[in-house]
Amino acid sequence: MQLLSVLVHPDPRLRQVAKPVTDFNADLATLVENMAHTMYHENGIGLAAIQVGVPLRVLVIDLSKDHQALQTFINPEIQTQEKAQTIEEGCLSVPGFFEKVNRAQSIQVSAVDIHGKPFTKSTSGLEAACILHEIDHLDGKLFVDYLSTLKQSRIRRKLVKMKAAA
Ligand code: GNR
Ligand code: NI
Image (cartoon, rainbow, N blue to C red):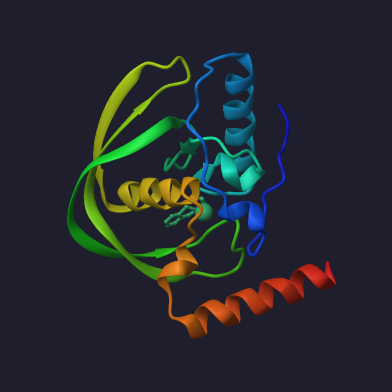
């Protein structure tokens, strides 16, 4: 297993629109394995392939405390969204910043697994917010896009400064 490096905002690669997976091969399985390893190492509850520089529609999530509930969504599509909720979000690509974001409260998402087999999942609360956050990544969006332009510029400036000092 390999640790992958996570791109940090404002890296332009985070703004790419990821392409659907068409080949369900061993490379895909390796990517998912390395993404899960990286997500656990970074203490995230989700990770999108685009965050590790791979512009494919692949995301992993695990909201359990003990790393025992990995879920992989490939080519995910939101089928239904209901109600609204506000959840404090963070992002491994926006390290050190946590802000409240409004999203749907309950969702139904369809996707395929690493073998290309379709499934659907209905969920709500933090898991729904996490899946919506990851699907945003696949479309080149970040949670900071929902904040005021003042907050967005402060966050960007601090991250650029941190990178220069690193
Ligand atoms: O670790 C993460 N926590 C989180 C909290 C609320 C909503 C979404 C997330 S996802 C984030 C990891 C990450 O950056 N995934 O892209
Ligand atoms: Ni994120």
